[in-house]
Length: 495
Image 1 (cartoon, rainbow, N blue to C red):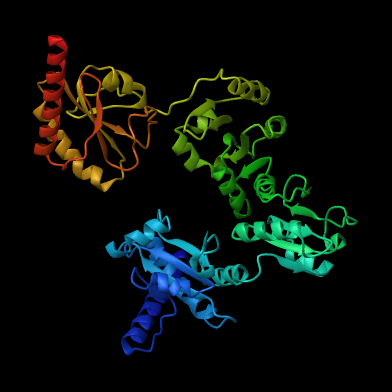
Image 2: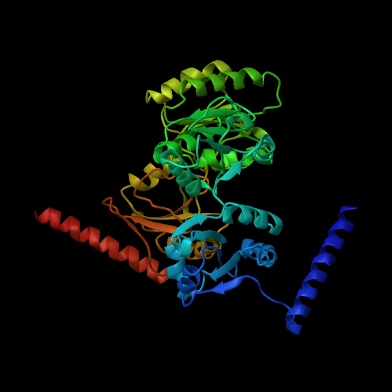
């Protein structure tokens, strides 16, 4: 049955493709997505109160998947009153690179919502399929805050799965109301905002308050919380902090995904407990973890409970094994990690206390040290970086690579030739480190892409290799650095 469905789906896709090609060739197709570039971007955007721009690259698979959905949404939104304009920019085109930089395009596709002639720019954070794009943009193009005039309005507006913020006011004017609307405009791509003159319409909370007060509804913890400080910065901090659960649940339920994203994007240190949540006896672990989260609330740590089944990618990233669960990892913003494997419920509180007091040493992810390391290009792991590179007293050319990286695969045989060239020279070492399987804690190595190559001279100087990736150029680079080191040593001896 599965094969029949797959074949039918493939046929359906091909049929749609042929239909699209036929329409295009006959000239009947109309594109609703506006194509912009460096020459017409500013002039076009400046004339629009609201426009959405996709920055894409022609080779990007995600962009190709989005294209028909984006075009369909553009077609539907062209009939909206007023019409909502969708545009695209080929950010891979050299002439458009300045635009991509201006709008901080870091990956593809990147979608931006531009308001007021481009004066206000927001990230698009909505769905990627046509109907979802349409509904999201209809809301985004309307008022930043919805007017709630009845209990029915409130019931339709405040659902059980999302964060919803409602301002209660005695009148829709004054400094408090203006500040609230400024907040709604600023955060409208992240949250739903509403306002009402009567708290009795709202499903939870004190119904007799006349305001001004901001009531945040949420599907976790205390379900709602009130706030009365109308300083815009204070309001924003309140919303951001209140919209993260005391303990974020990381499992396969899609409704939890927005909260997981917020957890990882927060500036807090991240304490993550990974366990098999279907096991008997896990309740005591969860209870103790929540107690600790309560204890350290407001002290710079966020807490997440991860189910083993949903956490495989996290395990690979952190370099831990299923045999180590239940385990806690604390991840700090500078990348330092702290690990407690095979813990019991009673271990949680004292271990977190020791971490806060600086008594827990950082955990460094490392592959096992190779039993044999006889190939021309030597294997370095995190646990041998000091001995083989930093304290070796040798001239070391070290490649940081990723196993899946095509450029790394092309460089591999070249580095092997270089290593063979120096095979009988004990003062030179050609080495490689899998940067996806080992932590790089030394700040001298700034690895942001693959391959990244550094040279550490015998006297301790570290420099990036940015030359051509040929045997001759690499050897020439090594020799020049050796000569420089020898010259510096000779000057020291003269002095």
